[in-house]
Length: 311
Image 1 (cartoon, helix red, strand yellow):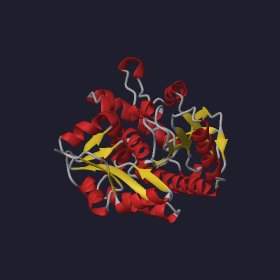
Image 2 (cartoon, one colour):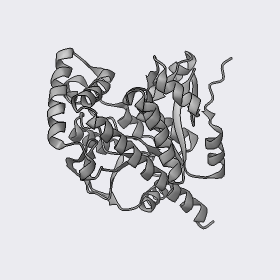
Image 3 (cartoon, rainbow, N blue to C red):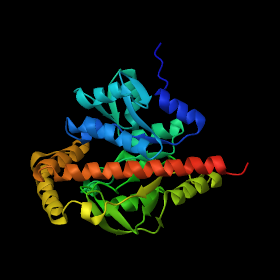
Image 4 (spheres, rainbow, N blue to C red):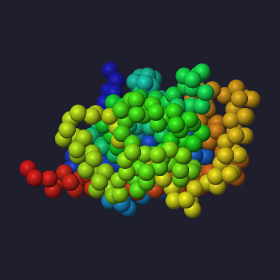
């Protein structure tokens, strides 16, 4: 009989046991989000960024049907370099495990697995959301529904700008997912510093985010996620005119080629990479590294708060 229990990397298992700060990282960015060979280099750099800020990285993925929290370097290399790695959302996890698949976890799956493992902070690039033309296609990322019922803080640069950002914010509100800007009252747009939408709440430090998480846990009322929107500095964003032109061209090609469903996001991200001659990739990397650093500092602040709290 197969053993489907979650496996933990030794360093992650020890850190969780000792109450030390841990940051969850997704593996879809490694297998599907970045081109080879940059994907493996960036994956290692993300983990090092978390370590440099005082936390333990826990990259989550599936190796031969085994769900792993804290992939080692050989496992990370496998997901970055072999063909046929399956993109796994929450609904796919049991199916992939039973069939012995290699799989990379999306934001939704990573959030759910991290929360089940007792990890409270997760760093990613951009969140999935409501797709353009969703009124006709009903195409909406599973990230939103999962975050509605998963008590985890997700540090991101907003939602991917190829999506319908306004509709995504409306869905997040309806689903009860809390959204807070990090040192901003404007919602970021992934490649862009400002997606054009106001936020009700803002925090100025990792300690404030940790306090939000503590309040949520002590209230025991809201069990959904907290989205920490961390924008790129203006000088580090993709040129807005280049962004808008590339997006318009990409959407036209999307319709021409009849691309739908899960293929939309990788198609458009790949087009951005080629059409901007790598500029979007450089921005994407800056985004995830900044988010990894902030997530680690939040995890450290949360761990410090737990250890210094009165008995």
